[in-house]
Length: 431
Image 1 (cartoon, rainbow, N blue to C red):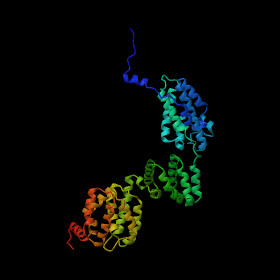
Image 2: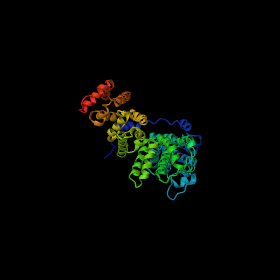
Image 3: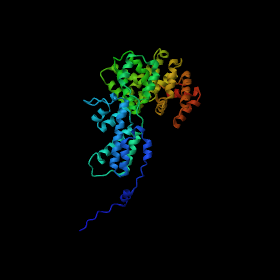
């Protein structure tokens, strides 16, 4: 009995007929740097024209790996990520001691290729392993896939110029230890800005490690304080969050001195918001409580300023759980008491009020309804005048319409009406 093959679904038949666009070898050659247009690319063209696509992609792959090795040499083979019991000295040692995966991964860590390039090159590596003449395979590489393979080799490697010479973090840190670089900070920051993201990330982590070390030298620490804020700005949010987790480890570690230095590092780089909320809450609440204690103290006009400054330096990303105490402290310090307000705290309080988010504005409205300290302050003329200025600051910002409606009541109301409003809330006799 004749056994015929089952008919393929119509859509699969159409897929098999899907034509590949003819390869434009002139375009490929023009996209490849001249020094890479060698025998491998010529052999790849001849193989493709003969329909031997598995050989064509293999030739392209060999040239791609050769180019990555050349780029490592240009960057500096001494910077290549260390491998156990392996000493890399030149292009031949790279070829003998690294497989393709290690070469691609090391180039990514050095910043020679991007994260996107790493992904597509590792994908090409799998295709090369499974569907080329490099290994026996029961399947043939699809023409479209072969052309896409060639495109990725060109796009992510062969068209890109070699990198500039590498950046030695070890040598850089040695310079920071032995020389005051603050006067040449701009030059140094420009040099770091030109480095690959992975180098910038590694350098920032190294600066953090050195800074929180209680034995950090008197030369190194101010150098770090000078350049770290700029480098913080170069790296991505993921790196910020990773450093926030390092703060947590320092905070729960055995050395409280290191924990204080870690916190100071985040203040310097304006990165308090990257510390996890659970660890930021007590920081905000502690300083807010200090500001309140100073406000209610005998010498509040002299003691509120430094605390308000420190609280302002924490930034505007106030943990939700700390918002009520934070808003209360800033509001009372700003409006002052019947005898005036702390002038040295005024600039910082205004800055914090300007940065009130929706949560903070809601906390303020709640305090006006329920907090007797705030209500009591707003039964005196001088604090009421200051409170109306606070309302003006908030109404100039984008806020919820419901919040704006409630605040507009205080903007329009006379001092006497506001005084009466809070006197009634406190159930006090009218003035």
